[in-house]
Length: 176
Ligand SMILES: NC(=O)c1ccc[n+]([C@@H]2O[C@H](COP(=O)([O-])OP(=O)(O)OC[C@H]3O[C@@H](n4cnc5c(N)ncnc54)[C@H](OP(=O)(O)O)[C@@H]3O)[C@@H](O)[C@H]2O)c1
Image 1 (cartoon, rainbow, N blue to C red):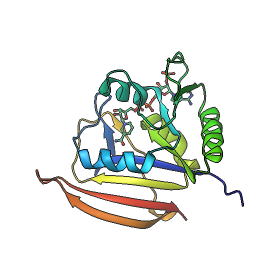
Image 2 (cartoon, rainbow, N blue to C red; image 1 turned 90 degrees about the vertical axis):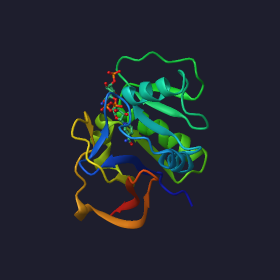
Image 3 (cartoon, rainbow, N blue to C red; image 1 turned 180 degrees about the horizontal axis):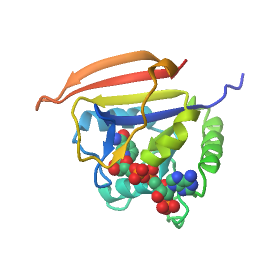
């Protein structure tokens, strides 16, 4: 039977919902990057142009390997990578992501950020993969919208702490 493709958000956010500062992540959590890779490998990633630029800057100009990056932008030219696709609207990117996921028999596509894209995609989202980092980033400049607990049911939670005492939780939420 053909199952509809789920729309899932993956995001790491501080206690005050900060996700970014200076177009980069405000923390260094290698374990979270590893988990992000495990969850997203092979799946279409939908991201805004700033997030694409941030990743490319960190990776010497290259996109994430092993996944299609569907970049939403009104201004960006199509780069010369066969796993990057520029779309002018969120709706076009979602359509393309759903097509890719269905073709590969994947359960979900991934909303990869940043703040502008999370804000627009959250109402359409079925599942949240959160990394809640228990710090405050008062000088952050990119934030995740408030998550209304009445709309979401927690289905998994694991708690960890880094060697330098930063506590963080991996939380999965499904839309009720
Ligand atoms: N903590 C995390 O898990 C996480 C994950 C991802 C990103 N981040 C952080 O988030 C920050 C970036 O977020 P951001 O809000 O600045 O940028 P963003 O959402 O990544 O990208 C914004 C850009 O996307 C395009 N865009 C947005 N909505 C559009 C629409 N409806 N139609 C067409 N194009 C649209 C525009 O590109 P054009 O200007 O080219 O038209 C816009 O400038 C960075 O600090 C990054 O490190 C954090």
